[in-house]
Amino acid sequence: MFDADNQVIEQVSTKVAYETRYLRLREDRIRRPDGSPGIYSYVDKPDFALIIPMEDDGFHLVEQYRYPIRRRSWEFPQGTMPGMATADPERLAREELRQETGLSAGSMRHLGHLHGGAGMTSQGFDVFLATDLVHGTAELEVEEQDLRHQWFPREKVEEMIRTGVITEDSTLAAYTLLLLGA
Image (tube, rainbow, N blue to C red; front, side, top):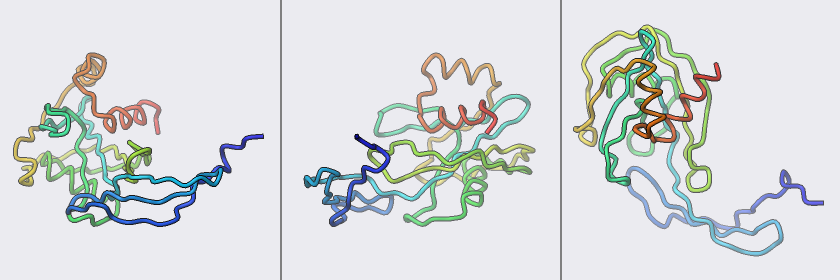
C-alpha cells in the first residue's frame, strides 16, 4: 500500500548554481523513493515577514512595480533582511512596516507561518497583524523608490481581491489567515 507520508526524497548532493545578494539557485542531486536519481533545482531565500496593518476597519497596502510580472501590484507590506541575513520575525515585521509605510505598531500579533511556493523555493513567511498604529515617515530603500502606500476600507480591499486587482499570493494567503481568526 502506498504511504505518501513516508515517501521522502533523499538529497545526494547540493551545489549553488547561481547566487546574488538576494537569492541562491540550488541544484540538488536527489534519489526518489523508488531509488531513481534526479535533479531538483530551487530558489533558496531567507524567510520574510508580511504585515497586515489594520486601522479603522480597513488596511494599509503598498503598491509597487514587480518586475517579474511586468506590472504594479497592491499588497500588504512585506520584506526580508538585506544580504540573505535572517532575523527575529517580529523584529523584521516591525522594521518592514516602518520602512515601507512609516507606521509603527503598538500591537503586533503573529497569525501564522506559510510557504508561498513550496515546489520552487525554500522561502516561507511569518504573518503579523499590526494594530494601534502610529503614523510616521517611510524610509524606502532604492529598490522601493516607486512604492506608494494607501489606506483602504475593508470593503474596497475585498473588492480588489474579487476583481483581480490584488493577485499577490502571500497577501491573499495572509488575508485568509486573518479571516479565519488565526
